[in-house]
Length: 403
Ligand code: KDG
Ligand code: MG
Image (cartoon, rainbow, N blue to C red; front, side, top):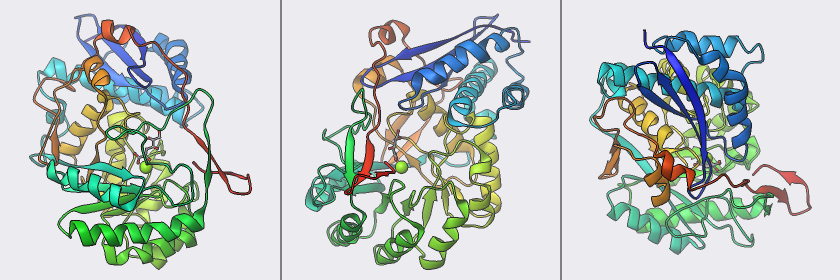
């Protein structure tokens, strides 16, 4: 058996923080797993180093399901973003090792390719509708078949999803959270106009997506979905916070705009009702935040029974290790829908050399054995951890709101 003899956590900040688990077997095979939880990175690093790694040493690296069950059931305290990101990192690293030992790209172990490539969507945003549409046009020129549109809300000093930088969007921008102000009425007035103009200028061949980022109540979301129906969105994402899964019945009753949810979910239990009642069209859970490849495959299998497709989260706070793992998953899973793709910076790409590639609006994980991604530890060591938080959000009267 490939016995696990060493495991350690590498924290690096090539522009933003990433937490990576590296597991090694007695034969010198190593595997990587992403454990990054934006703004709470060191909590996962400590959970792994102080509590899970000591129980990992000596185990058979091939027993992936058993390791998953051991750390999930064995904790007694189940689920939660910290614990599930740590389990995800172990699970991903063990799949990487198994595929390397087999000498195959991971997707071959997941049933093989169900498609030749994976459709991704890019992020177009701007301070005005015109700027956002111009940026969408440049994505289309690069071959993208799907683009997410986010435009600054008139009257607000900042809007989530709208970057300061032309190429890269990084919301974790301060060592104490930046306070932002939110107005739902201003937002609801602005979005339909954005999509009407986008259809007018960009036509109908491109898929358009939009992220509400948990800012609405169910009835507001129902109204927005209805207002956007004529623009035929690919999806409307995270319309409301989804702790209350039943709330989606109300949204569903009012609109045929497809709904996507789940980037913050960490287990199948968070989306069980949403899927079983067909309250959503796309499930956004991904490898790092939902217990790794092993658990994500169970989410996808449940979703497949109810015509729900996958749409994995792929923001820049998910490291290239998650990106690679997600692409192997996407290529293999029967009910794949779309994959989010936000480009990492050149520094991040240098720390995590990888085989995945983009061409013509689609991606492929490559044919290297394992995940096809590594970490350059010498480069990683030159970028020490820097505390960085996502902003927080308040309503105009000062009440705390959802960011
Ligand atoms: O860490 C938070 C980001 O991952 C999130 O704001 C990005 O909503 C997001 C998305 O859809 O990519
Ligand atoms: Mg989102």
